[in-house]
Length: 316
Image (spheres, rainbow, N blue to C red):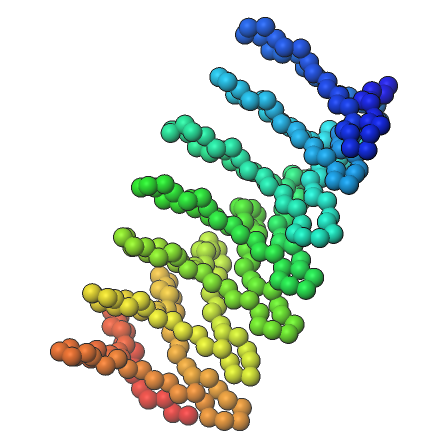
């Protein structure tokens, strides 16, 4: 069956419109439903025709004066013997200007005690493995590629901004989490920055990097290494400065052990195959006017049942 509106004979005239509408319901009753269904194996197609500028296609539920507005659902049907159908949302390619945008957003609410709607994107469950979720910026043919930004919502007066959590789920062996910048063929590779935000009235947030505990094997290692190059990269670890009180402290210690020796701490300069090895300097900084410089103390710990450790000069 084919239903079509009339064509326009004039060069500047618009084609005829066609409207399909269900009936209006009485007071307190729902209006009639409108269903478009193909025969078995057939296709249902909703779209605008090609033209100098193609028309828009809009799918939305009606506004509500007192209750909830209707839901809009886009999905493919389940399959009893094959794979479920794909659902694809994409913007058509353009020949000039910027590409079209795709925007997915949850609804806001004016209720003072309500929260905004959530957006959930998840891969499908599978018998042998779950589906992947991939988010990537667009490639640039001659310029920079597009960025990917993950940020939480801002908080109102007296409230905090939302948290951002990136992690793998629990499992027999949990998955790895990798943060890295891409390699570069001609220029410098991108930087990787992890920091907490500044605070104008309270304490700045902590940054914590740690390895998980192990119940039956060795604890995981933590490695902090600068890059290799014609001149090796520098590793700098420093405590924060204090504007009106003491500066922050820096502590480095080996791990404690309840049944064997505690972990060692080794500070050593780098070796050289053809030149001198690097220097090792330990000292306190100069003191300001009216203050003294800090002390330098080197000592071994006390022992409850054996000799304490020695402090000796190493001979090479």
